[in-house]
Length: 437
Image (cartoon, rainbow, N blue to C red):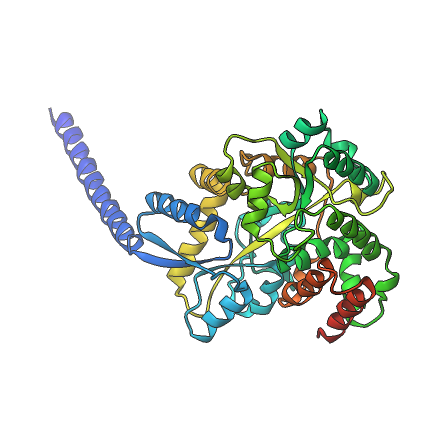
């Protein structure tokens, strides 16, 4: 009997102790929850206007997973550069928590950005995607999207005019022109060139900087030599070859009679409605293309052929590179806001719901190895195919000054319109680089 009492007494003590420990743990958890439940609002500067409405939905979905974090979208106005917008916001002491900027702008603001080197996703980034945001061994930006560009084709239009079309057969400038001639004979306008300074100055000429060598470091050296006046672009084979291709493209341009009259929206409309077979543009145009004609999914990319050598790597490769970078501000945002911003980035990379929102809702090609899903749109799928075949290259966009595309793009517009000849164009580009510090 005494033994039973001892057992019951012991068990009672154990129960009491367990209740006390449980109560302590409950209080700790309550305190922790209370501490973590403090609501925080972060701001997100978006420089991809074509996905702003989708971003709003993504942020709402994020807040469902993290109810205490609210994300406010701040769009960059039409015609305003990311650099200009962010500079203005810093000048007013109202910088966004997260800034979506071009790779070339990261170094200019890096003293205002959080060092992200210890984040888990750094090790999961695809090789090369952090090169333009790493300085002195420190990572200052999150690669938000891999985007690619080249000549977008409307396969439905081409095949209706001339029969089966195999994109891989276009391996030279002559191949492309022969196709253009066949299309023209069937009353199909081959191509539209949208006369946008960013498209001509950054994207088209970006090929010339990126195709100097397959070694990215050599292309960086080429930029340094341009600044040091060591390069004569009039004698540079890649620049001249690419301009030869440009001359050919503008011969078949839908806007040949008014080359500067086109708009971005018009280019998407012409391609989607089948009024042209090709458009020089990137995969960011997909939301607009499919909005205009949701029934046609037969689009893809071919490279801009630079030479008439079918074995030229750059004739068979497209540009694919991190195009937008997310950086976290440390000047005007609190530690709590910075942590909330990091939570959003990790949600994109490691949360299955976040991955789906990022990839499917925004049509983003993720720069991270662990994200196995890819966008459903045909332009993104085309880029992924080139990536898998290792037929992509990266122009040194991070080394292009912020005013490169408006200034040099304006020169390209004059060239497109026939108001400037090639010698004048190349002279002006060299003068531009000679002034860059």
